Image 1 (cartoon, rainbow, N blue to C red):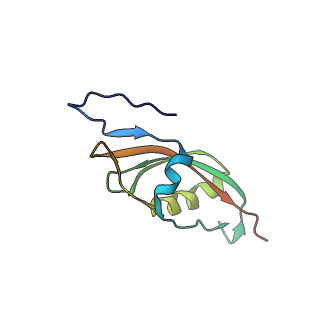
Image 2: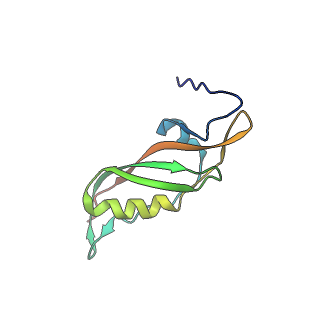
Image 3: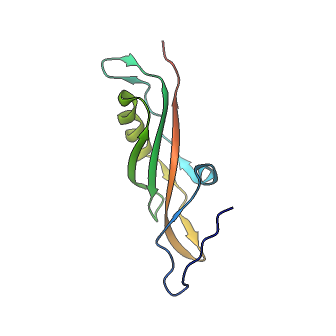
Length: 107
């Protein structure tokens, strides 16, 4: 359970939300390409920290973990994701969260 306390005169501009909680707000998702480099398949999870703007677009992406060849395709895909805008007591807010992308083995 997250508890957010703020001064009503100055509502927060950005809040932190667990990835599982905000996943349901995703309305447009691009799948990353598992083929990286010169057609070589990659596999493994990639974890990214993201900031979702007040309009629902991804405005910041920071790679946290994952195989180096898969980070760039993951960032490119998540950059095109679109979320339903979030409001808190009638005020639009930015969201800080993380996303995990799985790259299945491709043969």
